Length: 473
Image 1 (cartoon, rainbow, N blue to C red):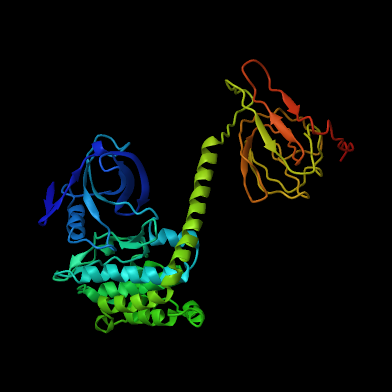
Image 2: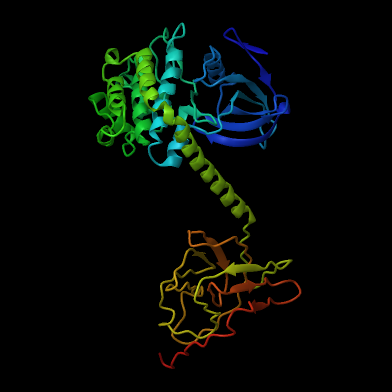
């Protein structure tokens, strides 16, 4: 056990942790998920990129987050000290926290690409207010000072908890020089209050309330504030009174119960004068009342979002497995492979068999691309009327006949469909390509025992007669 500012914190070594996976990263460092062998559960471990030899920033965060427990503030489980996987013999320190299965509000917004179901919007607004009110009600008050979607984590049921107290300060602190000034990203600046850009900035509870107002706007719209503005413009315009646009919210106010009141709350929260902003207790009371209007729909809303998240995760896993199982190997004329690898590539109608040998410039004047080396093409949801063609590496075929060499190909694929699935085929010295939905092209790689052998599928036509070019063209 270690003690930080009077709070005991359990030390956890790498001997108890396994199955490390990176689940997040940023300017501060990386966040891992790992399995604790003694606790029989997964934990999150935040490790900093840089420290001063004493890990002062990390220990400060442990001290802040260990001040108390609240359902809407992330729990600190201990302090990690040990080696990271594939990082050499050096010892690292990290913060061990409860795992939040659904990531952050920022990742949810990216997946949904818009506003979540309204019942979830009002619950997120209320739960974030609960977390802020808990911090501000401590003695002395704890100011978060970095409220934004990436610092709002979601559990398996999409309940919100505040995290990342690296910039947190107690209200009794003296005038603070903002640590955010060292950040190149404009994302944090977008949530900072106008007074934070003054050299004499002294954070107050109102600083968090302003950030909460901007965060409310992001929750309601699903967007990033000032997404197209650079940090310099943001720093200049926010003190002059610029705020995110309310046009889209105003459009929806007539059809969504309580949305007009939530919009009014966010406007009061981002007031230019800290003293005019509502306190956290007032915000919590208002959001609780608004959430009650939609609470009867929350189970359906959570289920709807969970289903969409599960589908995306399943798709991501499928794509990852496809990437692992797909082997695309490229070789030159003289190269050999130790074993044959056969690919059956489903093709689309009508069948066009191998085309080898003589071509005219007119015949090769199709929509294609030319490269000076080996070629790589994408097959993706092709219609019947489209011809997928490759051109020999020598910058197209001349008007006179040109003898083409042999093709070498190693590949494997899963189902190709009209939904946009794609296979990458890497070739060298291409002799032609066939496609059609009633046949397969079987390609055997050249082996050490002799040249490769091409065989058509039994259902494919035996040949296709192509017009020969006329001499002199």
